[in-house]
Every structure is written in C-alpha cells, then in structure tokens.
Length: 443
Figure (cartoon, rainbow, N blue to C red):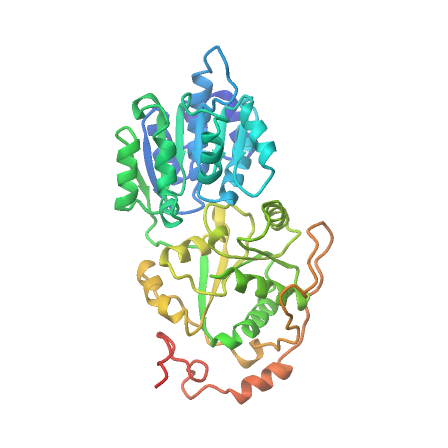
C-alpha cells in the first residue's frame, strides 16, 4: 500500500516523502486505514516494524483536521504519548519532529534526568504533542504545569513494558485525568497483547480494534543467530576473540546488571575499543550524548542493560551480543531486534554461561526454535591483559574522529590457558560446565 493512497494531509505526506518512506509496512497497512477513520487501535507488532510512524501519522492527521479551538493554548497538549523509558521518549520525539516537520505543530518531551526547569517552561507554553515518561509527567501534572483536558489523541507505547517496570498505577492515574474515551482517539501498542494489557485497553479505550502482525518466526528472519557455551570466568576472553574475528561496524552488547555493563565497557576500553556503557546511574544528559554518538557512528560499541532493548531505532547495528542471556525470554527477541532493521541483515551472538543456562530453555521455547550452537576454538579466547578496576579505564570521548584500534593479539597466553583447560572428548563445553542446563550443585 502506498501512503499517497490514504487520506493523509499534504503536510504529513510531505514529511513521509522527505524521509523516503514509499510503501506501508504490514502493521501500517493493517492499522492506518482503520485508524484514519477515527477508530481506536490496540496493535501488536514485532519491534522495528513501523509502529511509531503509524500512530504519528494518524496523530498528526487528527490534529491538523481538528485545529485548536480559539482561546488559551498554554499548557494544553492535544496529543499525549506515554513511553516507559527516557530513551524511547526521546526517540519518539525525534521521529515526530522529522515526520511532522511541515505541520507547524509544537512538540515537547518530559522525562527525568535532564533540565527540570527548562522542561517545565516548555510545558507552560503552547504544546500540541506531549511525549513523556510517567514519573516526570505526573510530577508536572500535580503542580498544575499542564492540563490533560484538551487531549484529542492518546498513545500508550510499549504497554507490556509499562507493566514490567511497575508503571501501571502511574499510567492509570494519568489516563483517568483525560477526557472520556468517546471524546478522543486512543492507541495502544505492545509487543504482546497479554490479558493484563487487554484489560488496560478495555478500561481506557473506546471499543479498540485489535491488529496483530506476527511473523511466522518470532525473531527477525534476517538475524543470523548463534550461541556459545562458555564458563563465566572466560566470557570476556571469548568476547575479545569474537570482536576481533567479526570486525563489526556497530555493536550493541547486552548485560543484565549495570555493574557488569560498567566493567565490560571499561575492560573493552582498556583493550583499545571505543566503547561506553549506558546504565541506570549515568546522568541523562550523558546518556543522550552516548546514544547520539552511537547512532552517529562515532561510538562503535555500546554496552547496555535492557533499557536500550525496546523501541529504539538505531540504524546499521551490525551485531548484537548477549554477554548475558536475558532472564525474560521476550527480552531476547527485543534485544536481537536491534539489528536486521528495515530489511538489513544482522548477527546476534549469545554467550551462555552457568547462570544463563537457566534461561536458555525458556528463550528457545518462546521463539519456537533452537538457537544454533557453535563451539569456540582455543584461538577465540584472547588474553585479558587489560584488566582494570572500575573507574580506572580511560574514558572514550564522544566527539568525532576515528576510534582507536583495538588491541590485537593472537592465541598467545590465552591459547595456552585454553590448552590447559582442554575440553573433554566429543566437543563438550568448558570443564565443569554442562551445556543445556546449569552446573550441578556442589555436594
């Protein structure tokens, strides 16, 4: 379906054409004809399929077709978009500004970790589209900085993630302050339309139309998946070898804990890799700069917890590496969905240690397939000669310029170490480790 065949206003079509969009994705082809008739939509689609553009196109269409009534406009947003994370809120605002650049609509974001007073002042002015995270939005709302009485369009993005992060009470608080469902158009998008998500939809939406676009495979078809069984104390050695062998253009490394992410980023930097970590205690201003550098190609390696796994469209991520297997099977799909976006190919490499083996069975059941297993040669385990204490590694600048060359080194001491830990016959895993299940508990 061509966008020009739909009843979309000229300023929105101009934004679509400028971005180079020609034909609708499956979720857009299913949802846009329904939503452009002012019907509520509860949509389920795989990450990276164009959900954001779907609700933004309809949102802009409605706001342009129904201009603001004469009278005060300060602090009265007409479209209200809720996102679970700061990064996703920023991404939605960036997409909205690009797609709606010819609409003349005023767009503002509100989220924690950045200039509180600056956001407050922006909200007190004329606002057409307000995007934000629940905590900061409630803070400003209770102070009377803005009102929700003029909202014509509501969007709840990544609804399942809202539940996972414990935001559901905050979401209900805000939605109860909106005009009745019959007086606005509402959208809810989620990776999974579970029972709890549907209960939220029926509570705050007006007879929503369910639209689900689910591929035959849960995971992205063009992602080349591979898994290595490895003991925990040798994961970093294998990571070094994989990075040297793969020579990835842009790599996203996922960990489960922020302390692990900080340690991995510091150790990679000590080996000459241009790497930084996004963790919960990094100042939001710095986090945004890190994300901007990664998206712009100035930072080739980003280490992150699952805060970066959903909703972010980052072009040209060639490799996703699960340094830790996720505890939630759905997060595996969201993580590897960061690569192979917009039809491109990509590779997802997972390192399964003794702890990760607890989660592997659930992941493979969720994606309805076995992840192909490869056994690493001794030469892939490079020596970790750059061990550093937290905070001692040289911080990588976020400006332009070429990234430093990573430290090389063949098998060397690492190969010798591996030879002293030769696996048993039949190509099994590391000594004392049982692939496909956790190590046996000590007696």
